[in-house]
Image (cartoon, one colour):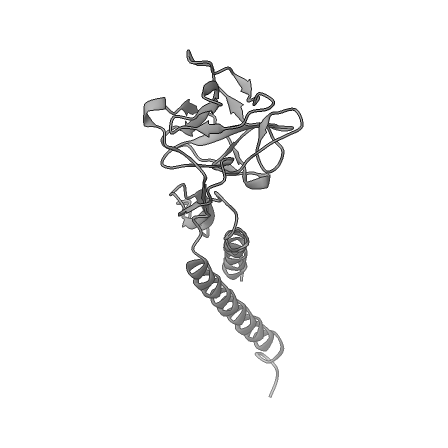
Length: 235
């Protein structure tokens, strides 16, 4: 019964992960969680673990100049009330302070460079008619570079945790993506890398496995009841 109870907890956790993936099928830049079982080596029941799948999602062309995506490695960095967070982009906008912000209103951060980029929130000059963001993340307002988007990636072996609003919590070890290796796409959005069909199949399999364990527990409980009330009863 203890093993069966542990199995139910395992499948419940798998279901929570699968449900989160399904709920974010349409979330721009979302990265799926992949669940797996880990044996601890001490005879205990398997423990569920999860890792973020950082594979790229499909790109969707929008033509909107403030829609941004990262093709390949790297994340934009935004400043939130809880500290810096990572994002794969999506619809951006210019707020009342003329800062470039993401859909949650969190300022996108820039980095210092010799061409005019400065660290901190990116400010777009008032009255800018044409805003261009090149593959290296340079923000060019009416032909003049005013900033460069900060682009970072986690070191190999590091894991990123999901946060609210499609953000990720930075890993303990992060590194700047060299400008020459960046591919920032203006007028495009990266879609979620969750497969809706695959996630639904996974959910059905989880629910069936959970039901099977429940049936086993019911059968064991019935057998215990027979052993308690019937075996040893005088004829």
